Length: 239
Ligand code: UDP
Image (spheres, rainbow, N blue to C red):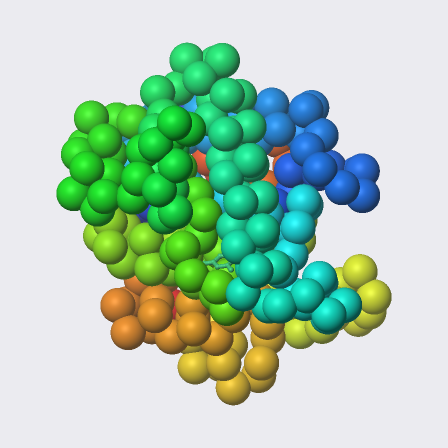
């Protein structure tokens, strides 16, 4: 049977930092990192233009130190630096299996990676390179979910994929409530009105204003990214 057609041509994948830690409580699990890279490589091979935003929650979240008395802005800068570490780890894993990548940081770090330059990022995508956006949007008080939404809009993506450890959006936390049910589709407005916390409200409203659908799926399952891109398997679409 021929493969189902791809649903989108240009996408941004947001990966939470937590995904990279696998079953450990902190940092980067190399087996998980390699598996994630293989899933990404599989999608790149189809010719889809792909860019990535990676979170930092596996290393550091600004709000956690801010809660213990540190100035929020400084704590958030530490969080943004954590995302740069994850971006470099993912870049390494992707290049090892033959995927061309560029890391662009919203906080310039020229000895480490390129600065974020929108037009240059677009050119990389045209050439088939995976662009990894690091350091969030470069400002405190934001998250990498909002970064994912912003870059998806800037790059002209047709969808924002959110790869998490849960296979979609549920009525309640499926890890805590066995009666929780998964939504197949949701409107942006429903997500906001029901306060479903799949992404922060600023990310959802940015996607609503730009009419870019959000696809929430589990990136923990090998091969799932491509499957979902073909419209197969389990996921939730917000549109
Ligand atoms: N962060 C920030 N501005 C941004 C993006 C991220 O200040 O534009 C900081 C913030 O402290 C956040 C941390 O970086 O907690 C890590 O990002 P996030 O919590 O979004 O990572 P994830 O939950 O996706 O792993």
